[in-house]
Length: 249
Image 1: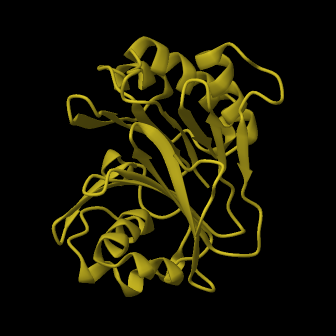
Image 2 (image 1 turned 120 degrees about the vertical axis):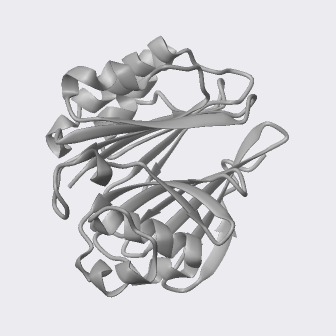
Image 3 (image 1 turned 120 degrees about the horizontal axis):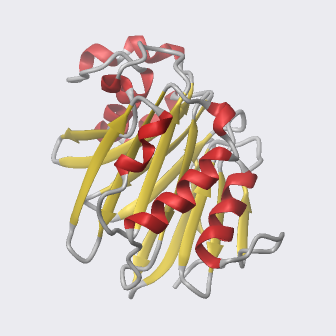
């Protein structure tokens, strides 16, 4: 079990590192039981087309992860299940494969990864890094994965993607006024993000909430069109694809 927390603002509204840290650290505290073995952050500034990944091993060092302005922040805190407690095994992972560049974070334990890990240039010991290569190889490989929720940023397409099966949580919210997308492993963490970023801490803080609680395997692919947020939802059991109009630009 691990935890994921983050947000994606309109590129016209980059967030300073101090505010990003305050929001994400406060949200992390709401779900810190999901893991405190190590911590990692991917931060990306769309205006500058620059990003970085930093990792630390102590909760006391989380502040050091936040060093630059950005409009996409993806934070992961780990509870080790496969692989040693080392920064080599800490998410997010940068995956460069077949001309694709992905940044991947994972929550869950997928035991079948051993069947695939030696097909790819995996550097660590986790199932999570292998999953990243499987996605880069062919996104339809998601149908092989179980007991998992995933977040990955695809640099080639500019999309932020969420995959989960019905065993693992992922909460998604959208603040329409600021055009900001919020996500976390728990609803309490998403509420806390909104409270810090927008000064609202009561239920109803977002315009839209996707309560992902189905018996299907789902992928949400978020994109920006004319600076507005859109989303496509894919159901991988039936390979149906449809657009969620509530987010479409």
